[in-house]
Amino acid sequence: ILIPRMTAAQRTAIPCPATGLMVYQNDGDTGFWYYDGTNWISISEIRDLVFERNGTTIRQKEYYDTDDFIIGNDSLPQNGVAITNKILFFNKSKAAFRSGQLSNSKNWSPDSIGLASFAFNITTKAKGKYSTAWGQGTTASGPKSTAFGYQTKAISNQSTAWGNLSEASGTESTAWGYNSYASFFATTAWGYYTEASLDLSTAWGDYSKASGLSSTAWGAFTEASGTESTAWGDNSVASGEKATAWGQGTTASGTRSTAFGYQSQATNNQSTAWGKNTLASGIKSTAWGENTTASGENSTSWGGWTKAYGKYSMVGGYKTKAPSAFEIVLGANNTNYTAIDTFVWNGNDRLFTIGNGPSTTNKRNALTILKKGTIGIGSVTNPTYALELPQNSSLAKGHGRAYAWDTYSDSRVKFLQKPINYGLDELMKLVPKSYIHHSSTFEDGVLSISDEGEHTIGLIAQEVYKIIPEAVQKPEDESKDLWSMDYEKLIPVLIKGMQQQQETIEDLKEENKTLKQQLQNVMERLDVLEKK
Image (tube, rainbow, N blue to C red):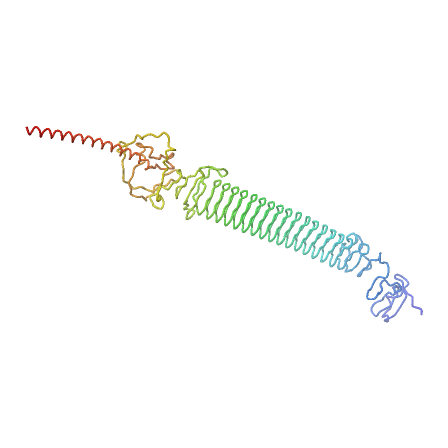
């Protein structure tokens, strides 16, 4: 059988070729061609079949070590050539597989194909050794890297990028979600616009950032920038080394500091703030509750609107303040004062206070103890005596009651003992009076006398001082304190006066006895004379 011979142009020019028509083409792709009813098919290579059936397996017949494989194009992409096509191929020399669509791209050129790499879908790029890229516009350029999704990038060794526009550029890093970035060794960024930017850091959630070494940021708009710091919740910031911030709007900026709750701040080393709007700004300070402040070193503030300013100070309750070092305040609305020292012990500063003020405009103390040991009750906030009650006529304020009150009086501690010089003469000079005793307080160096008072009797300290000064306590500063009387000191004078009076009585009795005897003698003599 002689098959017609012709050129390719003659073959394609045959009008309405019959199905099964066979010709031999003698130019171009020489060989036998037949028409299948729709297209011309080359059969010249049938004698050199590339594939064969081996049982249930279709396999390549030969050239296993050199042949590439492609579907959708007549050759593999070349370096420097951008192509637009839908193809599937296996690059034998690089053991790399590609399948999908390119659009004016060089991503599947040999210089962009990593050894044993895998790239699927649209304009993906797996350039790193053993890398994998899936999706659209993804890039896996690091060895053993993986990129999935849309425009994700896995740039470094063993990095993984998933989602939309996420980028994993650190070694062994992972970026998941939308616009997440993991840029350092073993970092992890998950969620929406998260960023892990230092070794071993982790960012999860929405706009969270972990920029400190081994730091962790979880939630929305959280930031962990300190080494080994942790930020959880909403807008929480942990910037101190090993700091922890939990909740909403919390800040832990001190080394090993902790902030929990809402808008709490722990700003100094090893400080702790819990609750709402609390602030622990002192070293090792603790603030708990609502709007509490602990600014002194090792200070503690509990409750609501409390403030511990002094070193080692502690406050609890409502709107209490401890301005001096080592001070403790409990209760509510204690009175204000200016501390002498917020860092070291000073005897004239307060040690312990119980506030019982009903409001910020009516601050009060139920008890005030100074570091030197003096105790003030009620409105006595700067006591001079070991125990001092206010100058107030009210039973509930200025009076005290006890079953007994003993006074030390041991001869062993009383030296230079001698009789007192006071006596009846001094007592006769005292002027007992009745009067209205008004309540009073000192405010900024001014004596404030209230309208309330009590009708009573007694002595006037200034008058007694001129006669028996030992029975009077004269204030060092009359703008801060009142004169006072120690009525017990008058007892020895009264005793001495009574003794003097008794001596006079005894003298008078003896004199009277003598006079009576003399009178009797006179009477007896008169009787004798009358009888004569």
